[in-house]
Amino acid sequence: MAVAGSVFMAGALMLGGADARAACPEQPITLIVPWGAGGGTAQVARALAASMEAT
Image (cartoon, rainbow, N blue to C red):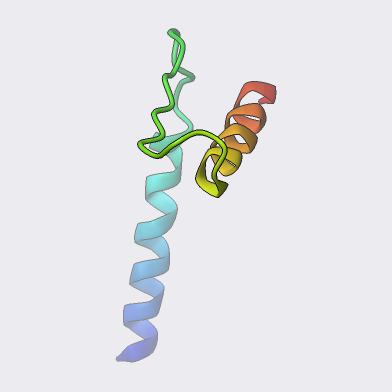
């Protein structure tokens, strides 16, 4: 029974991927970081924004 559940969950996860890559947004995305500038979170957000801009 555990194998059948695992197969079902794997199939369900594969179905969601098609909708996630359906279309790119036509407008700019605003990335809001609710913490102060210069911290670790801001650096991660800047790296994320740069990688999102490149793709």
